[in-house]
Length: 100
Image 1 (cartoon, rainbow, N blue to C red):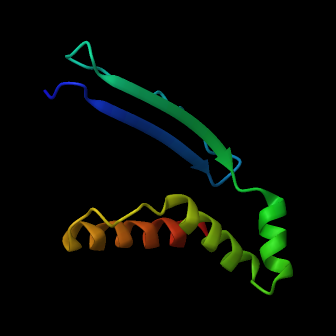
Image 2 (tube, helix red, strand yellow):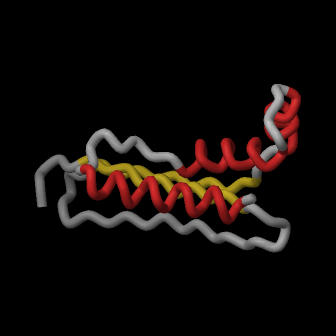
Image 3 (cartoon, rainbow, N blue to C red):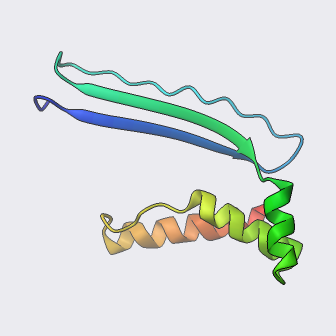
C-alpha cells in the first residue's frame, strides 16, 4: 500500500422507471493513516424538462432518452486499453437500448 494515497469513490445511480429501487452505499477503507479518501453518492431520474428540451430541438422522445442515458453512463476512456474500451462501449449501448 502506497504512502499518502488518495482516492475518490463516486456512486451515481439513474432510475429508469417508476418501479425501480436503488440504494447507494459507498464504502472506503485504508490500511495507512496518511491516506486521503473521499466519496459521494447520488441517485436520480431523467428530468422531464431535459427530455422535452431535446424533443423541442428535433429529437424523438426515445432518441432524447437514449442521449441522456448515454451521457450519464459514459466514462472517460482515455486511460483504458482498447479491449476494455470495447467492453465499456458494448455495455453503454446495451444500457441505452434497455432504457428505451
